[in-house]
Structures are given as C-alpha cells and as structure tokens.
Length: 144
Image 1 (tube, rainbow, N blue to C red):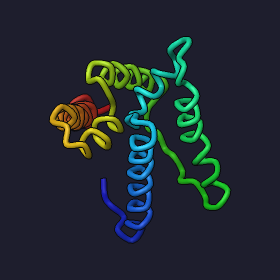
Image 2 (cartoon, rainbow, N blue to C red):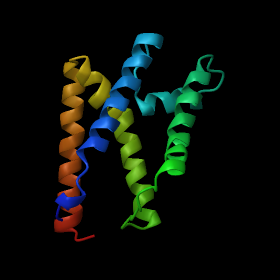
Image 3 (cartoon, rainbow, N blue to C red):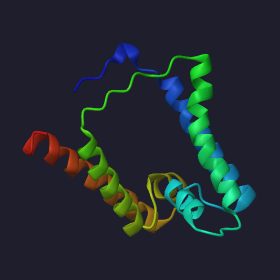
C-alpha cells in the first residue's frame, strides 16, 4: 500500500471530522443522546419505541447525505476486494462485536472519548487492536 501524497486532501478530512463532531455535540446537547450508530439502529428496530422518529431521521440523513453530496461533486469510486460471503461474515462479526462491546466506533470512539470515558477508551483500543490483528492475519497469514 502506498499513499498518493499528491491526492492528499486534509481540508475535506478536517471538514468531515468537524461536521461529525458538531452533529454528535448537537445530538447530546439537544436530546441527551449519544450518536452511536449501532444504538440508534437498535432503537429503530425495537417494536413500539416511542422515540424512534429521531432515530429514523438520523439514519435517513446518513443515507441521504451522500446523495446530496453527489449532486455537487463526483462520489469516489468504491472498490471492494471481497466476495459476498466475506462481506456477510465481516458484517456478522462486527455486529457481534458492537453488541459485546456495548457500542460501536461512533459511540465509543467519537462520543465516549470526547466525554473522557475510560470504558470507551478501553473499548476503542480493543476494537482498533482487533482490527489491526484481523487485517494482519487475513492479508499476511491467510493471504485472502
């Protein structure tokens, strides 16, 4: 893997990070809710959930935002070097991890760390470490 430094765009990365931080801050300040995507999705899937509307709106915003962006700028070309089976297995493992870890990268890594939560620090270090080990095993030992 190599980095194309001539295509490095720190301003778009900084803008995206600021927007994620602002959205998380607004949600917690206005609603007292953490912007953890796995928790938001779990709340939408619960039957008879009284506060499911804001959750559904949040998730729809995640789906609509790239469409709006695509109206003004070309979307990046995606290349996924895995078959459907691997993607399903990866999704299952990530889903189980978010349940066992009581949250996902957005909940622990963005919101939890910004609140100086020790539990979120441990969770973030754990799933980042697990990701590093998984990539190493899959790419260098199993040669997938």
